[in-house]
Amino acid sequence: VEVLKSRVKADLAREAQLPLIHTLPIEHMLQAHLDTLDPESEDAEAENAFYVADLGEVYRQHLRWKALLPRIEPFFAMKCNPDPMVMRLLASLGTGFDCASKNEILSVLEMGVDPSRIIYANPCKQNSFVKYAYNNNVRMMTFDNAEELHKIKRFHPNAQLVLRILTDDSKSLCKLGLKFGAPLNTTGFLLATAQELGLDVIGVSFHVGSGCFDANAFGEAVIRARRVFDQAKDYGFDFKFLDVGGGFPSAHVTEGITFEKVAAILGSTVDALFGPEVRVIAEPGRYYVGSAFTLATQVIARRTISRDPAELMSMEQNENPTHMYYINDGMYGSFNCIMFDHQICEPKVLLKDGGFTYQQPLISEPHGLASVWGPTCDSIDCISSKARLPLMETGDWFYFENMGAYTITAASQFNGFRKSEILYTTTEQNVSLHF
Ligand code: PLP
Image (spheres, rainbow, N blue to C red):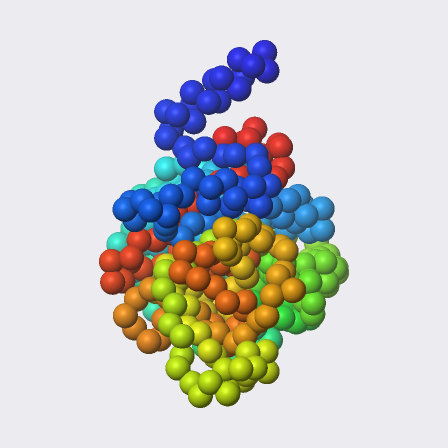
């Protein structure tokens, strides 16, 4: 029976044209792919940068969520990484989805996910997208201003509205409050407007900011949400829905904020302030995928900075980079996270002089300061201005860990460079049952 089942699965995968999911550790995936490369080949594809995505890590993060925040339903913020395999896995695990546009909604519906598992969590929506949500029975959506209420009245009068409030985002890398969120001195007016228009406001949402580094921000935001729940009664609403947004740390963040700390504060504050009749959801993005993607890039060119020979003598002590390495993914591709997501990306040596060095720091080799650049012709395309590295040659490889969040999703093909391809593996056996 098991053999038949696996055959049926393999047939279905072929039919759906799903990429192959390996079951190798990341290290072996990286090595196996590098082994297939022929340095003499004229095939540009062969030397492209590539990701290894570990779907097992996404799965583990889901189990961790369920264990630590059992009351809060995760709606994956797909903007963070709408990778089709990640999306399929999460859909099969039963998460909901936070969508920000018509195309995001479309891709979730195309997977066969019920519209009730979608929240259209963009407080400022385009008319036609609201109509699209109406026609496709996507009812939950956020708002934070009165104009949006009039728009929704016109195009989606039976929407289930969620009032996004402003919270303190000063402890976050990406301060979303600059753009979204109703200050608490405006929520009365917004609720009155919704009441006049006969719209159904079901609850409150917030976002503490993406890349939050203070777990207390979640607890404080829940307290604010409670105030708006109470206020809503004066306008005839009986709220039964709380959306605690995103901002949950990725698994590789182990100092300062951790998911455990957030879960302890958030879970207990929610339980203390909201009875079981209130449905609670969240919109985690980076939490699910941040640590699941590793990127491998090739050194495609190297420039030695000409200097006074005496200065170059002591490579170890030199404070100025002695070499510039150019790699085949950059700021206009996966490393847009440096600009948009305030990330620091650390190159590590993956292949040097033909030797595979994943997670084996080359301690015995002299290290010098170097800068690392992307492949485009723009000088902003810098990945690291000062990295301490051994001497690398053209054709050697770097790898970058924790590249799953806000990377490939916003990558462009500026200057004609292709987006890096993705190879899939799973370090958890159960994952293959979900495809
Ligand atoms: N929800 C909304 C409305 C967002 O704008 C974002 C990110 O910008 C997220 C959720 C996901 O945030 P994070 O990846 O920090 O969890």
